[in-house]
Amino acid sequence: MRSLPISRRPRRLAALVPLFAVVGAFALGGCANREKDADPAASTSTADSAAASFPVVLTPPGGKPVTLDKRPERIVSLTPSSTESLFAIGAGKQVVAVDDQSNFPADAPHSTLSGFKPNVEAIAGKNPDLVVAANDTDQLVANLAKVKIPVLLLPAAAKLDDVYAQFGLLGKATGHVREADELTVKTRDGIDKAVKDTRKPARELRYYHELDPTLYTATSKTFIGQVYALFGLTNIADKAATSDYPQLSAEQVVNANPDLIFLADGTCCGQSAATVAARPGFASLNAVRNGGVVVLGDDIASRWGPRVVDLVQAVASAVAKVK
Image 1 (tube, helix red, strand yellow):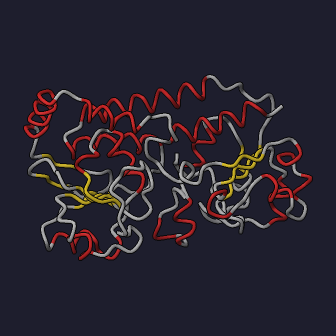
Image 2: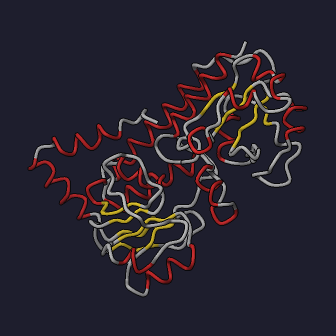
């Protein structure tokens, strides 16, 4: 889930879909270590420089401007993708709480706060000077405005450029502009390299991306679909789709006979190459017969943060193995 707007899908799918998950290529822990090992004087100088860049006006694409008078030092993140991005750009020390779905990095200040059903009183109880969220659920922005807490809305990315834009906004919001720019370059270069180094298939390769065992999937119009498109793959859901996140029938999957099956429900729902092969009619699929069933990490397949490179690399590896 990972790119499906949370408000339009069941909670289980919301936890799954786009993208992006996208898994270790960014060495986020290394970023944290560098912060700890930095020279105190240099750190002070950097902090002073960052503080001098405020106030700032943040304007998310399609959203309303958010003004921050000074660098936020008590950030609450209600979206896993933003949590990962904040730590990746070196703003982890400014984060005081993350939502109950943010499980990476391990040293993030985990809490019981929910991004699906935000509790304004509980959020305000963390005394934040900035809240980052993916959706304005239950009028989150207006309710927090009443207690003078700004909210930066960063919705699910629709394309890779949206990911880079969000890195930039978070960098500007936290005083880590340079680090955000570096993350953008590193992410773009990592994706470009994975695509360039992957052998182009000699024939059309059809794929099926599974969000959950009830055969919900994602079309090429989604963020995850665009990742697969980087490799020229054909999405079996496109012809039968009535929405960006349609539910297919087993018959539709079997008749389409995909060469690759990507499972975004391995951790949550125990799906694997073995469970797929055991489904009625699935044993004859090209993907099952030729070892083309790939279990993606649920997180990397549903988040649009810095680990999107891991998703791209996973797809690249699967494509390279097809004969």
